[in-house]
Image (tube, rainbow, N blue to C red; front, side, top):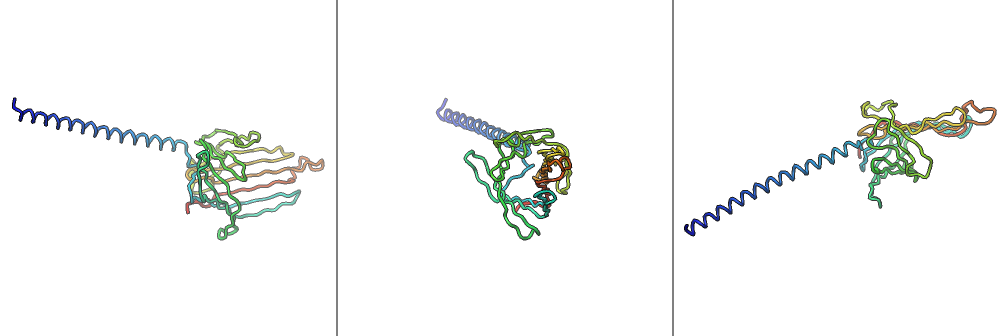
Length: 249
């Protein structure tokens, strides 16, 4: 066999090897892309399954509420007012526990034109819960995914007695941007002994929107012998917030 033929055979082997490796590498790349795409879909599906969008959290998001408030200072001594709150996520940061902390600035207005900042609070998505901290008091206001009948301790991160919250099916969907099937209510308390106190609290959330409504009615009744059992309000407050607009700046 001539040396030329041997050289030719070596070239054939080389090109055959090159084509085989090219095919294997191409197949590997395709499989790798399919695998990574599948992983991305699984991660996205996992995030979606938790339904975190019942409380969207992103810098620039805002919610405007109409507010009716009554404060009781004593027997037959109370003050009622109507105004507006605007909650704006103005910024966020990562804390020492590597959690994203969203800072919400709450402003108050009588006409939706002139706004005055009244306080700031924070929102943290901790594991599968939503933690809202107001005046340094953390409260677990929601769990993900929000399933009907699910209950949890709202005071998980407080050194206080257990306060059981529960997702129920009682709510009125008054906001036109929220579909009935995408609205849930968190019952925080429903107590009234008709003698000494009343404590009714709940929040309503809309998927893709956030907090739609908040209602707090915390009252004490007169407990003197001459008024015991007459449900004469001695002190407390009632506040109802209803969403009228939301968006992003």
